[in-house]
Length: 164
Image 1 (cartoon, rainbow, N blue to C red):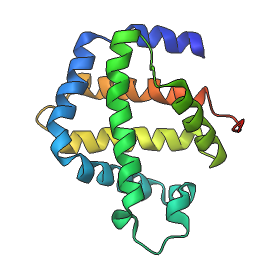
Image 2: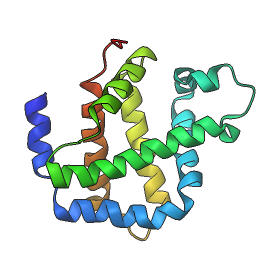
Image 3: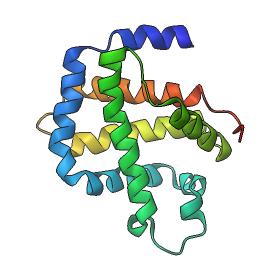
Image 4: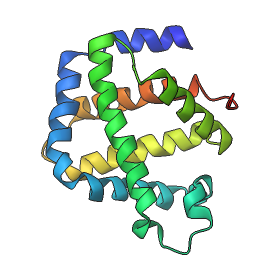
């Protein structure tokens, strides 16, 4: 699996990075609202996904009013954008190792599976498409999709029980 991933990231072009960065700069001003839409779309597609979030499981607050959901959604959006820049500069996702280990352990602990990552990918791309329809094109979809896939690949490589 790693050999396939490294081949893909080597092909992350300057154009792809530019598409992600340019579209992100347009979406940034509404990032909080878009991030929330993004996760509400996930729950619409896969309602059981709510159970994966400890802060939603026992909460009486509707998801769209949960501040922790908004901040989590923002971090996913931002990390995907940063992944695009890292792929271009380093040829791979270079999230700090400690962060990656934490992300991997957390996703492992809560039972996040491949299909959850797939639903999240679909929801992310749909959210971007709706946010900037005038810029949306196959190249844009591929650029964001590739950045997300590489980030997920890096997280999955660390999905094991926490050593702490």
